Amino acid sequence: MTGVDESGEGGRGGRRSVVVKTVGLTVAAVLVLGAAAGGLAYWHLNDNIKSVDIDSALGDDRPARGVTTPSASASATPLPTGAVNLLVLGSDSRSGAANEELGGGDSSGARSDTAMVVHVEAGRAGATVVSIPRDTLVTRPSCPLPSGGSTAVAYRAMFNSAYAVGGAVCAVKTVEELTGVRMDHYLEIDFSGFAKLVDALGGVTVTTEQDIDDDYSHLKLAAGTHHLDGERALALARTRHGIGDGSDLGRIALQQTLVKALLAQMSSTELLTDPAGLYRVADAVTGSLTTDTGLDSLTELIRFGQSLRGLAADDVRTVTMPVVTAPADPNRVVAKEPAAGKLWRSLR
Image (cartoon, rainbow, N blue to C red):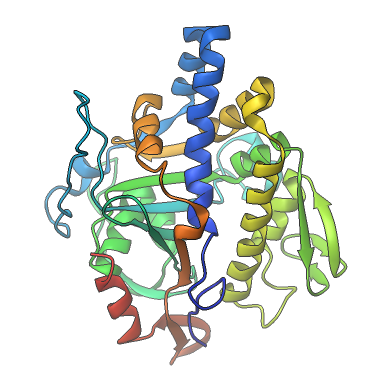
């Protein structure tokens, strides 16, 4: 078992583009609605966003920051052009009735169902997205807790347990320990937010190459083309037991198919000419978005989105962290060395 490029050799497009599109759609919604709704729309979308102060929680015991270079623009606040790394999580949050109805369980916890390290190159003209299988066994470091104290170091822990025991702060610290790469920003969207985004786009059309019958995600699909609403698209994103060998790598491949279909849907709906539809998308995204304090306002998201305007889907490479089956557990994986270390060093 080994991590591979999810879209073929030198693959482009994929998940990173969804982040760019998400930010871009939010920016566009604000610009389009500004004249019609004034500050009300901006205030509502801005107030939707939740944030976590990761920098204060983790302090200075972290990988070094990359060197940032301001734009040569004559603007008083030039856009950043330096390399930047983001941890992007999709969480199966159990908080709120909407998430519970979509399979999040009770309100006692959550896990990082999807994890991606997004590296945007200096100049913001290229990017690499690395998916980390949630079944990866890692050394989970001691993490500070909001209530005081800290978690204990855990060896051979499931990667997605970091979020479960210590939230966004522990997820970031665990990724930094695993990769040696500083996470400059953090973005998280939960179950209900993903489903609302799909519904706001009018659903998504996907083609599956094999039958899917997963009792865990409650999804049954015959091989072929299907138009899915938000709830069924979410079930597809969570499916792993009804396909292939049941591993997380199979689920990641399904997510890749879904993300590409979402990109096609975003492009075909022409949202920039549909203010109401654009607002629904922006509201769905910001309403379920958690960021670090560096991206916790529409103003900051707009600046970030503007700095990525030159980044096209073809400029994005998608890969999975190289892994092998864990020696002591055939149902788990560990980072494959030296390949994984080489990959992470290329992103520093």
